[in-house]
Length: 224
Ligand code: SAH
Image 1 (cartoon, rainbow, N blue to C red):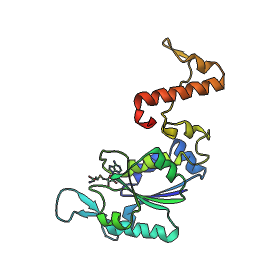
Image 2: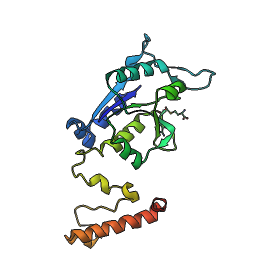
Image 3: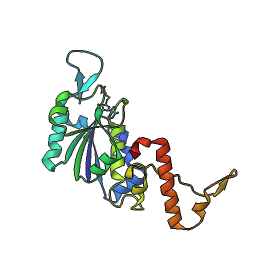
Image 4: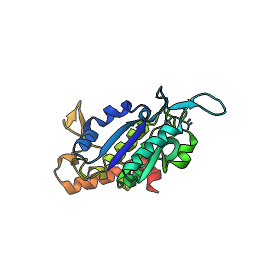
């Protein structure tokens, strides 16, 4: 899978992709992530990429020209399955959406900034809009990073234990069961006996019951 992320401040994401699971996925060539600086596509002497909003009002708007030039450049080199714009009014990101997108080959992600992007970008160049929740952040970089993380960890070979992602919350509409690690006792706080039994079938059964209990308690809507 190849992900091209267009941003006004790509450096915000460098560290994110440079550590832990995502770094390993990139190093092992399970995914290719390119951070593209929108300013590189400005034809303006000051490398300007934004302008005042027509009709007035506070806040700058990312201009269509550099964005269109950047997307055209990428599209001239390969075919893309989707051109995504991170936006608070897009479809709410979910595990289902991550599962779907993990099957794609090439995607472009556009991060907005300031007041957002010129609406014509959304009308003519974007094929999908995704939100990470009903709140507004300053830029699309954290939303893009969250989306990429959710997708990349599902790619075959990224997680050490191939089945690990399947036992996470929201797969099968269940929340994950509680997990514990050593020491078995801390401050007099113990762990459920069953986990020390070595009986894997019983442990699986217990985990499933815990998942169902937790889902009933915290997210009964998922069980409907
Ligand atoms: N004026 C816009 C918000 C702009 S915030 C509005 O009210 O809808 C600046 C940029 O941050 C957006 O263009 C978008 O790319 C990103 N962004 C902010 N909050 C987001 C969210 N919840 N989900 C996805 N992207 C978001």
